[in-house]
Image 1 (cartoon, helix red, strand yellow):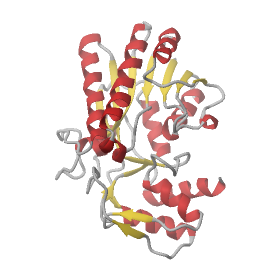
Image 2 (cartoon, rainbow, N blue to C red):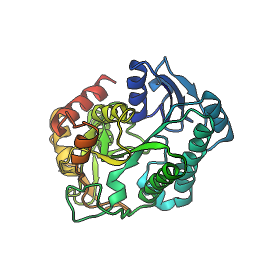
Image 3 (cartoon, rainbow, N blue to C red):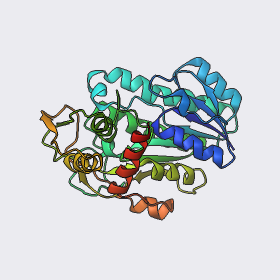
Image 4 (cartoon, rainbow, N blue to C red):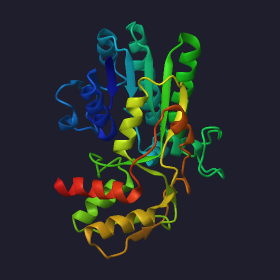
Length: 306
């Protein structure tokens, strides 16, 4: 199958590309390398260094005639979406529409796999773990833009019969995550602990997230290529972990006994987030294989090897 993967030089999508290539697919990566790393791109994939919003990217994708489109490229910094909501919208929604239209006009497109965001889309909800039936209530422009993209995919389904799977990720962590810039707390803590630097927790540390390991997320992207299911589905562990707990596990693995520093919470961040994965088990035949301790140990090993 011919597949376009946007953001394929990044943390999650580069590992998805590896899996697609290993399965024998022909892969075109579209990534402007603003946060992705060229060295992450599989040598058997073709790299187009281009912004997903550009006319050139659209033209190349159209000429490639993909059968599947895997969309990971996005503005992912929640705090930046609060201060620059227009940029967030232009990149996340504008970029999706640009390449979705180009791929469809190529004539071979049958399926879209979209990296959605369950944690930010549902917002602060009393239903824990949160199922897909919970109405969207994002508390950041980032969450709003990611849900808007799902609405467009649903519209393209109605208009053009396009099959799509929106994988609603919880908080993904693992190898290749950049600890600088638009990074997750695991990557930041791992890098700083291994460098002998102090770590800062924003808020009281009691805020929770559903941390899912990247290798498990990759498996969901593989299953999404041939499932009969169409729509949005959570990709998560269903386990709620505090930020303080993550710090403690990582610090113990590194041999650090110093507690983290605490600063005031940042705007746009949720208090609790944990997602139900019952639908993923039923519809995709997917379930996580890494618990928090095992996943964090593998992550620390990767950063240590770097």
